[in-house]
Length: 214
Image 1 (cartoon, one colour):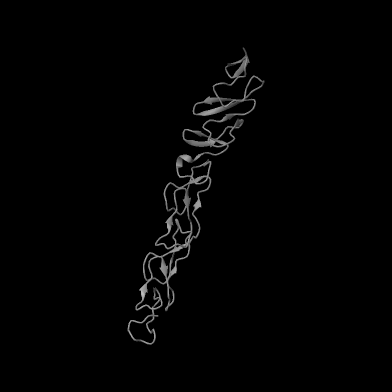
Image 2 (cartoon, one colour):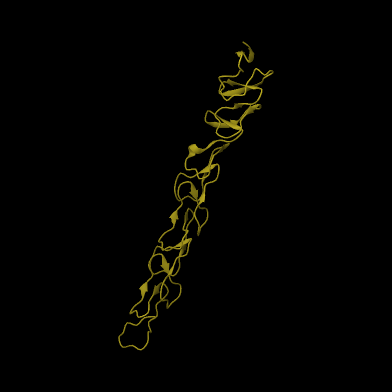
């Protein structure tokens, strides 16, 4: 309540919702942005709780943070903070930090409600990716002309991000056009190596598709 007249014996002015008057006030004052009152005769305004904001003065309620934004603390705020790159928020009124993009997704812009998925047979090696180039071929696949395809049977494609199929034990990997062929080694002359220029063990030499004694 307030009283604008001098010599009065009571405060008969009533502040409406959205305004307040402290003890001894001669008029009502509007709540500032980031604050509100939802009832009359209030001595102070309330701060918007976490997950909500208010950008206008003289308000009776706060607004939920939209998707793509969040507000963790109940500090005075006229807006909710946009999720940073590599993060997202897929629902409204969130009162904690934004979610980190999961494996296989990325977010290169701020304020997103969802992360962008990587292409077919692709993953990221960490959460919170911000670039599409972080998407690499998933385990069991390799990059053939920019497309992640299934590694041929008999190759070793453990791990992620392969650009060529690896050699499994006692197998021989040979380039064939833009693909690869796998041959079964029939002796210990073959080696296991990711260096596809060296297929034969020491003291052996490659002859056609065979490793022969030197």
